Image 1: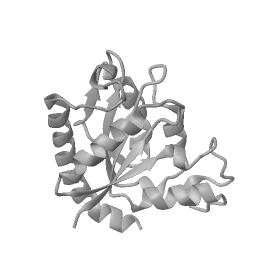
Image 2: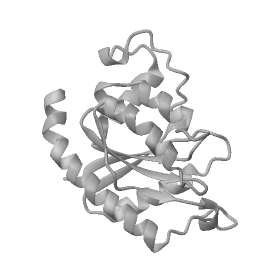
Image 3: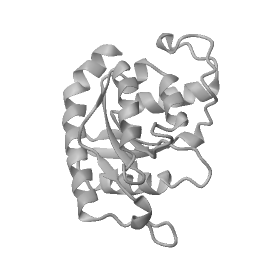
Length: 191
């Protein structure tokens, strides 16, 4: 049975490029025999700054946007966060989206496809990891980090991955599959 892999588009900014990279990693993951990739675009959920009156650990959600988000995250076995870097930090939309839930995230691994200038978005990834581990998400070290991402796009914003990106993506997917399988008993016990 394949693991459900939620590829989270971590930017909601107008003109963003994150969906291009998310689509690429989704297509690449389809070639991996362990995953059923699902695109999860934060823009589709329109989550305001956390607006639930009760703490997320209780799971007593009042708003439909939170209930939809909860179902989407709960259904996943693993995640890939597609992240640009905003001011040396993760995009506010992804930080907010993670804060909305607790139980739904637990005992699932996360990989990263980050992009940016010289730092390749790595500061974004590093800023998000403490938040994820607090929620019992296992961030794996294998990742795709794309520096000077504009050089990989054509005039139509189509992405062409080089060998290094493909090798990094394969290593990340292999490790996500291992962790997803290893954490499966814990996910079952937590329900």
